[in-house]
Amino acid sequence: MTDQAEKLRQVIDNLKLKQAVNRVLAPAAPVKRNARVITVTSGKGGVGKTNITINLAIALSEQGQRVIILDADFGLANIDVLFGIVPQYTLLDVIKNKKNILEVLTEGPRNTKFISGGSGVEDLVKLDRQQIARFVENMSLLDKLADIIIVDTGAGLSENVMSFVAAADEVLLVTTPEPTSITDAYALIKMVSNRDRTKTIRVIVNRSESSSEANDVLNKLVLVADRFLGIKLEPAGYILHDESVVKAVKQQQPFSIVYPKSQAARNIREISDKLIQRGDSNQQNRNNGVRGFLSRLVGFMKV
Image (cartoon, rainbow, N blue to C red):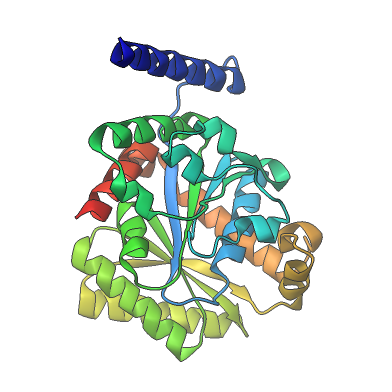
């Protein structure tokens, strides 16, 4: 009787969750494709990866895209800090089946939403098959709520970071013109190529002193990745050094909002334009959405 009651409770909970999602959606919303899952990563810390993530999300939202950020930097989650918003719940509450996905979504600026990763990504590994299925089913509802899901990973070449990168449909790799940053970016590209040479990797150069310097870094990475790793990189753009970015961080506000006419804000909008242009029908048809992303992620983490 206890097992039957538990199964009945789960059925009712799932039904309530789906009904809640339907209420969030517009009544006449057309049937849509899966969300694009874009992982933002870097070979080393301190290159501005998270700052790019939140401002890119805002730029995409301002162009009519429904954007949700997943803060997957479980050790040093910073999305909420840069937004100046304290979330009530985190992804850990979903993993432990304490809350559903709608309850952990936090409203961000300019119609963006984000999910704080909390801590303890290892908890995913500890789940049994039934718990994983329930978690994936719960999270896959994000496909109905978002056009683009941006996953902000931790920095570096750890197994957790590489699992998120390998699981994503698309990867945005952030580097700076500093030699150590470029070297670490190349190391990450090499690790990705060892797993999947068909992975779409787009490169952003941050804090460049000039467009020529940024394009030089982009061209060199594209060339060496093609010649020595057999993997195709796509330049996604660059963000020039801008003091407005530093000021915005101190204010815990996105620079694209508090300094919309700054050089950095113009650059991030250019990157946003390119991403939307790349999201053509052929790419959309290849997207596996949140369900595919999480299924692959858990699979990689359990290996």
